Amino acid sequence: MKIGIIGAGASGLCAAVTCARCGNEVTLIEHGERAGRKLLSTGNGKCNLSNTDRSLSHYHGDPAFIKNVYDRVSFDSVISFLTGLGIFTRNRNGYLYPYSEQASAVLDVLRFAVRDTGVKLCTCEHVCGITVEGSGRLSVHTEKPSETDRSFDRLILCTGSRAAPVTGSDGSGYELARKLGHSIKEPLPALTYLRSDAPYCRELKGIRLSGRVTVFFDKEMAGTEEGELQFTETGISGIPVFQLSHLVSERLFEKKGRGRISASIDLLPFMSVNELASFLKDRKERWPMRSAGELLTGLLPKNMSFLMNRLCGIKNSLRVSELSDEQLLKLSESIKGLSFNITGTGGFDRAQVCAGGVRTEEITDRLESELVKGLYFAGEIIDVHGDCGGYNLTWAFATGILAGISASEEY
Image (tube, rainbow, N blue to C red; front, side, top):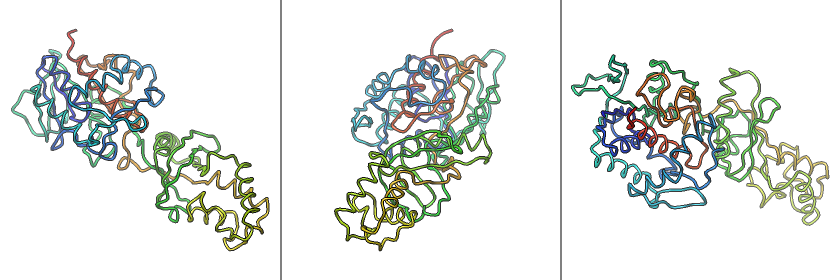
């Protein structure tokens, strides 16, 4: 069969190699100058390609749909596929990387496989439309007319999302799918930082520490995550914040700016408020002549310590012996619940992936369109996204492989 694939990212490259190995004539169309540009930036250039924690709770979308994909192409199948291409993995606390810790190595072996299997790679070709011919074949139309026949027996959309447009992602695949009758759940930024107008953001800029962040919609808890947090001039960041960002994006979209969104940060999650108050009281008794500005030394960075004191009305110059038990309790409560008013997210420019996409109820178990025979989907264009930790890249690989297998099957 003649199979076309639009989008040469992680899912498109896997789909192309899989289709070619099944004996098909494959054309891979990419609107950028080169394939796999976004892949190079994953895992800070080290390419966190999967994870040893295979719980599907790390994915957001229709659970049954997600389970079906991994029932057909498992995490182990993805690793086996990559190993067969030449990638040996390194396990870093459950996070799987290529042993060289170079994203370029993963892209290289995929490019080698595309070349070795005879896939025709066409770059700098932006697809502007797809039509269904009377014969049932799918014709692809590009902005620059092509002398090559762009009519296919099967077509796989691997166009990605709107996240990280600097890598070439522009969301154009959503419109292609929409014109073919598919409905799109609004794409929203996910795995990004949260913006805040808290007056102390600037003085905390650059601080990194372990803590727990809890997001509230008005007074209702929406989610909580723990890990290394980063404070920026305009808000809060770090993996725990990234994991919660899709909830904030969805709330902002649904409420159109109405209602309050806040984040409460527990700077010492391993202690309760009372345990921390008792701990500080013990310090007071042990070092009564130290200043209040020195009380939290060894627990928190200096800038954070001074901020906590100021928020509680405690002068850094006071002797620790002058602090009352009530002040120590208030200080403990502030440390366990530093509040940030959330005004937005980092947007698509700073997002790693998107929440939203082609609705999964319009896609079969084989990743074929329910509406257009011979049309398949893979990767970020589908309304599924994962947590940090290699889950989104695993999804791209798995759906690319599955779409390639399914597109190669005879009806």
